[in-house]
Length: 258
Image 1 (tube, rainbow, N blue to C red):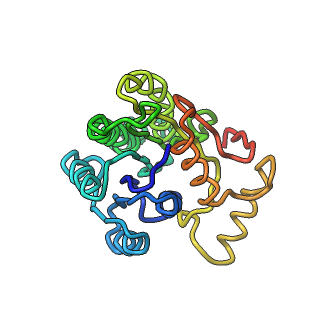
Image 2: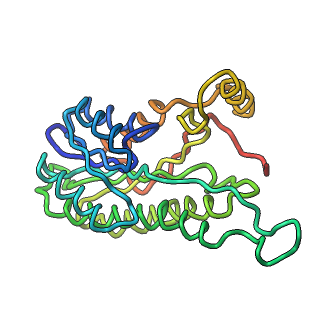
């Protein structure tokens, strides 16, 4: 699918994997809306690639609508990449056996609200706008790429909320792809493994920790880099025959229980 002159939205696009996706989509000719809460980084990146920044909390439907409207001003919206998300680590029960020390239910709900419901909200609104596009020669009007995680398949101890949210992303991929096929909209999901993003921090201790993590990867024995993830996202966007798929990009890792 040719995205030259089309608009795209990348949620969580101001840093890490999202920022790499923004740059690669822009390099393919798309006008990209960086939808994020990090205003300074988001605006700077939008300026760099000739796109637009919109402050978006993906739990706020009205803010997502604003991003969709902003994209429409840049060109026909053909691409949505859902990269916004958070993590949370907590065991299901506490060591003292008390109800109050069991997993924080509010935290569980927040992870689901951002990672899963926020992704679907952005998908349903962006797809609505895409459905109004003129179809290309293949009948295509747009494409959505969601971001899952290997935690959807190999969830570790303490990852109940995160794995549930990413498992939901995986689970909705095929049914939504089937649903939107009549509108000429494809849906794919990318499931990253251990990716070197700012979440790991900086400095010698951080580098040593990342090197240790990298030893658990099958091959190559290192963390992935955002551009490696972004290139798969772009493949899912531009390859017209990619639809309804969930693709792991993880160096062959299978996560241990902890």
